[in-house]
Image (cartoon, rainbow, N blue to C red):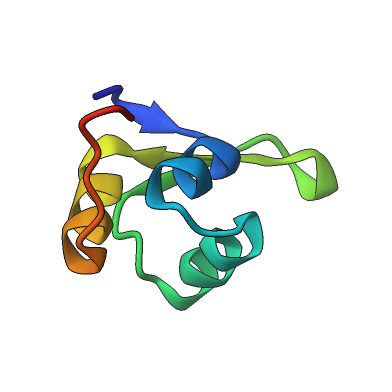
Amino acid sequence: MADEYTISETAKMLKVDRATVWKWLKAGKFPDFRKTGLGKTAAYAISGKSVKMIAEQLGVSLENG
C-alpha cells in the first residue's frame, strides 16, 4: 500500500465515485490528508492509513489496490 493516494485512486480502491470521496473529505471522514497547490488547481493526497480505515468500515478489500 502506498503512503498517499489521489482522489481518483482512492475512489477506485474504495469502489465509489470521485464525488463521494470529495464529500467524505469535506465531512472529515479522512483524518489524514494534505492539500497540495492553491485554489482550483489544488490536489489532495489522502494517506494510505486513512484509505485503509475507510475500506475496513466499508468492508472493501484493498489486496489489489
